Length: 337
Image (cartoon, rainbow, N blue to C red):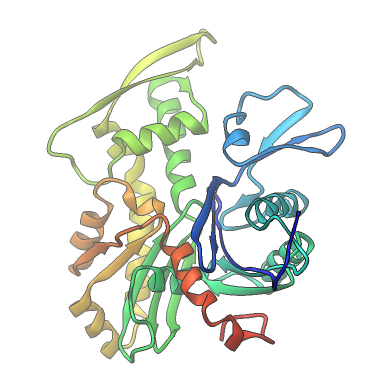
């Protein structure tokens, strides 16, 4: 059934791991894994989101469950378009007027990558597409007043990228984007388990380890978790017990890369803004910052107080939602000014 009226304003946090959709006037209405299952023979989309994620690593030859976004950017344009179309239809229903959509992008994407996002959203049914940088959206979502002439530092750790920005007067003064985030933590766990225990595990198991016992700073009490994988010597399933001390060994390298990137941004920051950050602290957002001890590690290495935002996973989507209020001001521009 068609719904009359002017199309909705929709904000999309198009994440490597999760897609979060915010609808103006309703708040966050959808939170799904960015996974699509496609039939190789017909090209038909069989499942999207949570249902497709359950298929990862468990599909027959003719079905491929993939994540169409890698390292924060579109790696498979056609599948991304189909995924966006599915989510937009699920949220908006059938509208006579297509929705205006604001999408978050990493702070240092190329013009080609920006165009890919705009084209995919337009093909998926958007009337007009706006882009907003992830650190700025994260800062707004964390409740920071970015319009004031003082420095705020945001470290947004997602699934594919870590975006670091110093924000003042509504824009980013110094920023950096590195392709080390949640996915790289998972990869580090897979490699470590393979090297130390001679066992092959999948992405899902690595993520469970990261969430349940993962840490990048020594825990007061060691915790453990049983996992099952394929023994690389016998080829048979095998169960092993993994300890949090092992997770520390596995995850410290990607965590140090994030700390070094933050350090690099601080080195390029003007003295006055650096003084503001020293007073106010560093804000961490994104699901990746929930790894145990990452805030303490960053605080120890920089000497600056580190705070984790309240609704850290939804920060970017909530910030996009607040930015939607200004779409009428932005109209006629394809990018955030």
